[in-house]
Image (tube, rainbow, N blue to C red):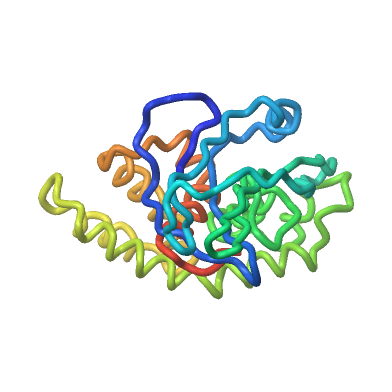
Length: 236
């Protein structure tokens, strides 16, 4: 669900939603990149109630179910936030509305993880150079950075293939797919190709009527939110 914290009439991201483990179902929502603002204004944010359950598709049954705490960490601080929840009496699932600046199973903010991936795949930086980018902080550790890179490598090809299939239906102008494929072919390895494909994804979404705020600069959040809408597995 591509939502805005402001009340606007925008087309939303396609709502094909993946379920989480056990009783939890995950919805990804867009609240912008300012984590501090989200944390301060959480009680006043407009978080629309989904009209149907993303798990069982029961309509007009969801009820508010409070929120739960988690942290959004960068290399300087850990910011406590709340995550809004709904509950479906029909299937007994809890629906969590996760901000796009968070990634499931990761405590670090998406922007911190993106910094590491950018350095490794776009700048092709060494681990020593990546480490220097976070000094004088001791976090994230090199082990954590390596784990992010390995996870991205593991899932990049799946995301890339799905993205190319999506772009293949982009018929607004002749030859768009051919241009995209030619550009990506000049880049080696699926992770680097996936990063290079993000501007094409952002252009496709905008032409499809989906508002993408800073989609190219916040490419990891954009990719993750789009991938979630396509029922793809975790990205990092």
